[in-house]
Image 1 (cartoon, helix red, strand yellow):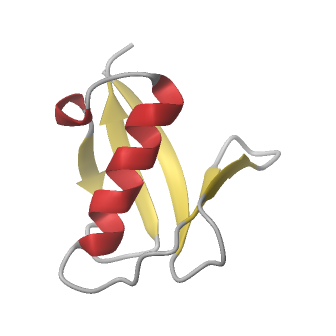
Image 2: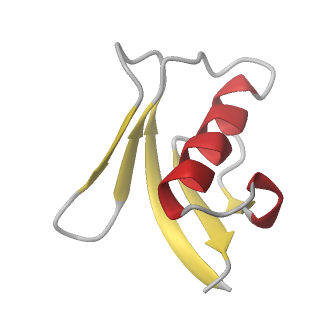
Length: 74
């Protein structure tokens, strides 16, 4: 499994993914961070980005934080 660092920006105007110079993915999502909606949106976007099933993505650290670490298969 590969670990990926994320920085989540909730309530953005549009959904998009950027990668900064340090290899950290910046995830802009329109969902609000309420009742896990933002985490669900992050998992969905990362699954589409890496072309893998949502069930193979796991949030390892930062469940309630903007800074997260997820695991994806290599």
